[in-house]
Structure formats: structure tokens, C-alpha cells
Image 1 (cartoon, rainbow, N blue to C red):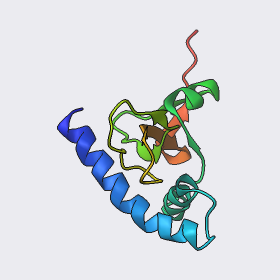
Image 2: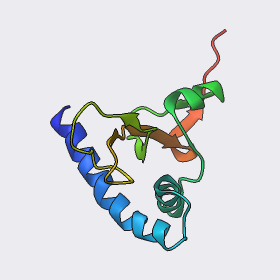
Image 3: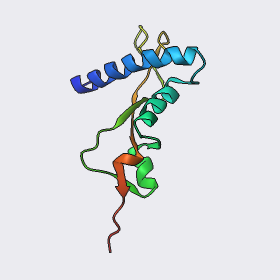
Image 4: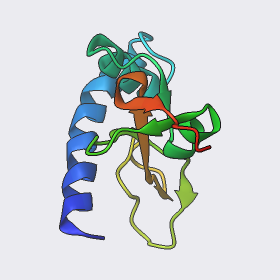
Length: 111
């Protein structure tokens, strides 16, 4: 894992800890729902993966940085649990890179 990826994971973990308190209070049903709400407050209301936007006929604008969510957990081969949105389970939570409607433009059709 690269240093940049480790830093992104660490940043997402910190935000997720705060969101987890809201999940426990019943404000959100999941950490990703809380993260999506934070992004929505910044104007990012429709989130899709890179491929998801391509399927919808859009391309991510050059230079845009992905927003981060937690991906689907995978069983970890390591003995100690990996920190993720639900700490304490022996799972690895990968990062999911998504983009919003503010970061895409319609695909240009070639003749």
C-alpha cells in the first residue's frame, strides 16, 4: 500500500469515527450514508464510480480528485482486525473512489 493510500485511509477513518457516533444514535443507517450526506452538504449530491459515470454518458473532468467511501468488506487473512467503518471485525474495508455530478461532463461523441 502506498503512502498516499495510507494517508487517504487514515483520513477516511477519522471522519468515519465521527460519523459512526451518528450511526449509533440512529441518524444514519451506515457510515457510507453519513459520508454521502457530508459530501451532499458540499454540493456533491449524485455519486457514482468512474465506470458508473461512463455508463451514464459522462466522463470525469481532467484533474478531478475522487471522493472516498468504504467499499464492500473482504475477509482479511491477517489475525488482527482491520479498522474500517465497523471496527473489531476481521475484515478489510477497501476504499471506494467515487465522483459527483460536479466533477463530470458529457462524453464527446466522435463522428
